[in-house]
Length: 212
Image (cartoon, rainbow, N blue to C red):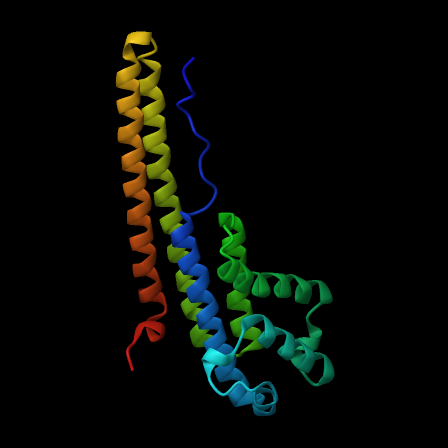
């Protein structure tokens, strides 16, 4: 009995591509958090031993800033509804968790995390440069996902059509060759996608790639 030639369309970028995005996003937010804390809350940085961006852990920075927010009644952040704070906490801490523990995210989830990262940089860290970089990254990644999905759909659809024309037992060898050719093309498509993500990240976050 022949196996089905159709495969469900992926709902996320190839894992190596997505992992790069989350890792770089985490790094950018940690640098932004360090610079913001140094400027606006130096005592907070000293209390936590954050003397460089590499010492800052994203989830710890968020929690420290949240505690600071709740103990300062003059902070504009107090006006944010609790539901919004909880959502932001889940997304920001989720960025680090997914990057560190190498968890694959649905593309919609990734876009939500990028959106929350921009919100965190804008409102909490008061870093418009970082927020702008994240926004550009989000737009570019979403466009790439659409192109990659279209290419993947085309390859899978082409395989399904050609397999449907060759269902007699004598064509099993031909079917095997079709599957193998499609597999290689999909691998190349994924490899190209990862390379494009690397380019997008360098374009979006130039400061992280500048040698000092």
